[in-house]
Amino acid sequence: MGPVRLPAVRRGLIGVGAALAAVLVAAGCGTGGIASKHTDQANGQKLFTAKCAGCHTLAAANAQGTVGPNLDDAFAADKAQGFKESTIQNVVLDQIRLANPPMPANLVKGQDAQDVAAYVAAVAGQGGTSAKPPSQLGTNGKAIFTTECSSCHTLKAAGSTGTVGPNLDQLKPSDAVVQRQVTNGGAVMPAFRTKLSSAQIAAVATFVSSSAGK
Image 1 (cartoon, helix red, strand yellow):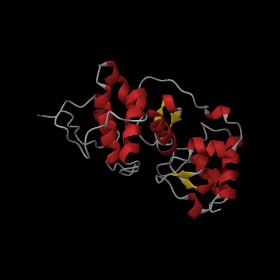
Image 2 (cartoon, helix red, strand yellow):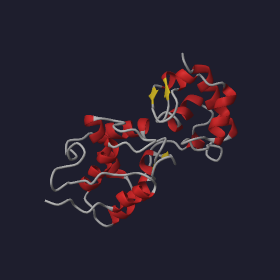
Image 3 (cartoon, helix red, strand yellow):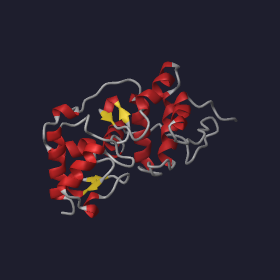
Image 4 (cartoon, one colour):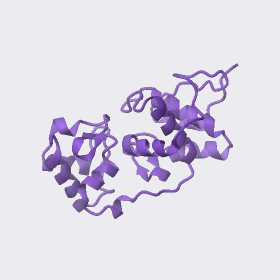
């Protein structure tokens, strides 16, 4: 059988520099097999928050990342056009499996990848959130880091293992360096000066500089 027509999200992702493989749903093909029907979306949500939220916008996860595609925008039209959730799940699964810098290939693997793909397919383009927005995090540096930074950086004190940005335990940046980087961004990291208050930036800088490498 020939491949099914890919939903608009593929075209949208290509437009921002990603390169999805064709999802051969009808033929049972792809980059590692089609999406499973047996998934745990609760686990998928947890993994998305830990690994993906810093780079993607997804209202249901209260994710507001700008490094990668906005998943609500990417899938909203496909949901409106009646694409099956399983088709969108396959697109997301292939995207996880492929390397699209700065996103590495296989950021999550095996059943975890299936769970994340199922979660995104279920909630993308539909809105809804249960997590606290940045304005409600106060000046708890660890909470701010966990919400905004952990999916991209490794920091043992926060239990994070992100690989998009530098390993902060190895880098051990000073308070001033963290404040400058969080404020202004750099490389693939967005600037947070319009998202976090100066007090919140100072709090996360203190947390990172005082706990990195420990």
